[in-house]
Length: 340
Image 1 (tube, rainbow, N blue to C red):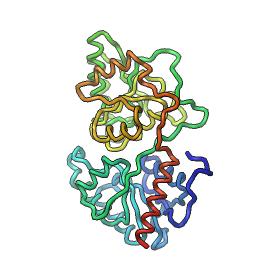
Image 2: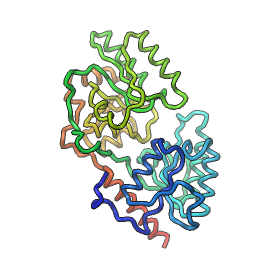
Image 3: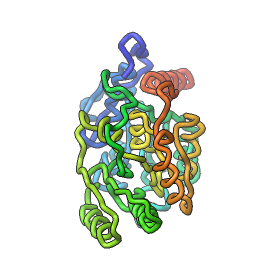
Image 4: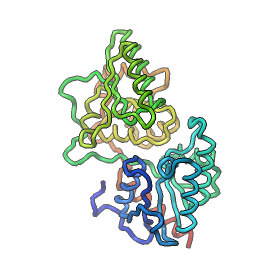
């Protein structure tokens, strides 16, 4: 986090940050971080906000309410009382399946009600424009790489060589674990043994899917380790302990797990796509892109060249928290000027 002297000074241009939903959810935690970096006041009770107050909300429908329709109702009621801006997380994509149309309608209603909207990537911005047809343009403020606590050096090589290929974050189908398992099975068939590391707990509703993956791995002769939820204090060591990191989401639009690998000093293998290419351009040299049919070879190269899985100590990983705060404050100020 930026030291106090480097944070933007709070003022009338900086809205109150409204923190809704489970405080342990990643979106809610990030909302609190952005508020702190930007010097913004926070609130948790929408009903106590003064009418006409400038308010910012980090939103995914699943945090705000139990259904997309209810989430849109909450936002529309709020926007009727305050001057609301929103950051849209987990934007609707066709891979949402049966909920896609309902979520599109929710996000369409949200951007129509808000005074301004932002996304965490140009990829997400394009999705909102395509599916929600907003009548005013949005901002793009990329997720920052948040440094680990002081004293946690970014590059710490394991004392013993690792044979674990790690996938970090909540487990759910489509996160890339199945593709890594298939690639590791192919490597074992060619005489190269490695383990699958599931670094994280199953997402809500996906415990059985994780059990099925572990069963598949055993049947296919690939050892698998499941860490469960990793405490924050143990995260740097966990991310630095693996031989190679893979970010293999099939529908990724903004990835906190990717940025955690970078904060740990790792250069992960990232499945190519619109968002992955955007991040490769944003932080040149920070990721190694792979295609679906290239993962086995990409893993073999990474295991044969451990140095390729680490970032140099002087890698430029901006934007970080300070740049994120500056971008939000500049955007909010532009909105205030345009409304004057």
